[in-house]
Amino acid sequence: MKSLAVPSPVQDWVGCAQRAPYFETEGGRSWTPVGYNEAITWPNLAMLYRRRDPAVVERHFARLRDSGVTCLRLMLDYNQVRHRHFESRCGQFAPAMVQLWDDLIALGELYGIRYLLTPFDTFFMARRWRTHPYSRANGGPCGTIGQMFTCPETRMAIKNRLAFATRRWGHSGAIFGWDLWNEIDTNYAGGDIASCHAFISDISAALRAEEMAAHGRCHLQTVSVFGPALKARPQLAEIVFRHPALDFASVHLYEKGTIDDPRDTLSPARATARLMTEALQHCPADRPLLDTEHGPIHAFKDRHITLPDAFDTRYFRRMQWAHLASGGAGGGMRWPNRHPHVLTQGMYDSQKVLGDFLHLIDWPRFRREPLGARLTVHDFKGLATGCGDGTQAVVSLMPDQHACGTAITLDIAALQPGIYRVTRFNPISGECESSQHQTSSNGDLAVLVGSAAQDVVLAVARTG
Image (cartoon, rainbow, N blue to C red):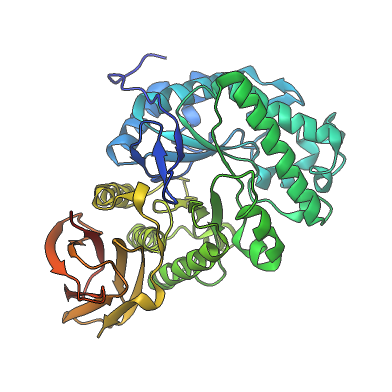
């Protein structure tokens, strides 16, 4: 595939930071996942199949790079249509799909885009089970989708799929990590939570062994969960957040009445802050946490509504900053849930602005916890959320529709004494201004924020 750009290939791998629940490269550079969910059949990538028009796809990757995007979440196949199965028959890898992934890995390396890969499109796999290569009705090993975690032959097929993928592409730093199963649930194991735990243990160990043999090191691993399923079956938290084989935790932030079908933009941001705070309570202190799927799924899928661009962009932006300020790594990863399945230009602009903010915090040394009662905002109506440790903090303020333009102040308690640089950041324009503040003797920091008429993000860092 002829390139349109001067190569600057991604070579180093991403790992967890040694001293904080965030990510860094092997070279010690901070790395933050800024991105969203893509699919090989959606407009941005569809023309790469059988190389129908790879230049169109490459121009999209150039746009991603210029928008500050660093990460895409992708499924190895997408079974909404029958001719995008990664395996044409169980164990027989489709040449056109292998070529597509050869090209995607090359584009990721060239444009600095890394992938969080999950082996199956489980949504359409469940809805079109009889036509799936793993279904016994189609010559595969598995009788029902409810036996996928417990059927030994299916387990071997899943290991084989992941082994093939890492043998062919696992050498590349374009792979950020593996989501071992998209939205794990007990319905793949006959309702048995112990079988789910055992499945992840076995798949994780097999993939790590394969990667060590092939590459001498391992990519990061996680497993995602559908938010309402976690609420209905809280025992899944032991796998998603605390499984000893996993490196970071990922959740899918869907909630009825707020995120799924938004009627305003503040309620989804409030839900994001609350759900992320609850998730952090389950996580080990050093384990990164991020949302890897969210969006207006009920409005789009059930009500057949594509949200107006301006409203959807504001909804997207506010969820992004609520995610970051509540302790998430990056801004979360939107599932477009639009027709067509692409982000708006405003969403890309918002990701660029987020990327411009990231240098204000030393993430590999940021041992964040929700600020909770440590944060007090005076004379403010809206959402105030933040996270911090003893020397750094991120605070996001989102006024409600009744907020006036009067100046507000906030206090952050229990910081280490010293002088702090406080950067007031505009999450819409990316403009920022910094000022110096001295903590009181007990470590409290008082900041005059200014007007509360629009969203504001603060980056707080001790100088010296």
